[in-house]
Image (cartoon, rainbow, N blue to C red):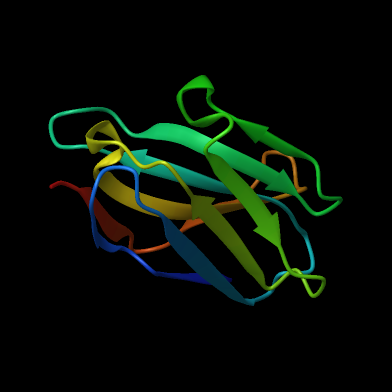
Length: 118
């Protein structure tokens, strides 16, 4: 089992920054990718950013150039640095892990609220 715990959400003004953290614990040996998703009210959950164990990253178009996903060397924490925040970034942000089995197992964190408002 893998446990994920997000932190760092909050209320920020448009143009501001926040840094989300996701602590990973448990059987992380086979975890090969971590992702940040978000879900706004009355909208489907969407993939925001991905980082692999090797450090390869990918972003959805709406956050490119504003958000940066990173990890620590121990692969037990990932981060999402969010700059130039917009009201449309308001959502619950979830950390997600998947492993290399076929089919892959996956796990979710409990989510952290990010609200961008003046």
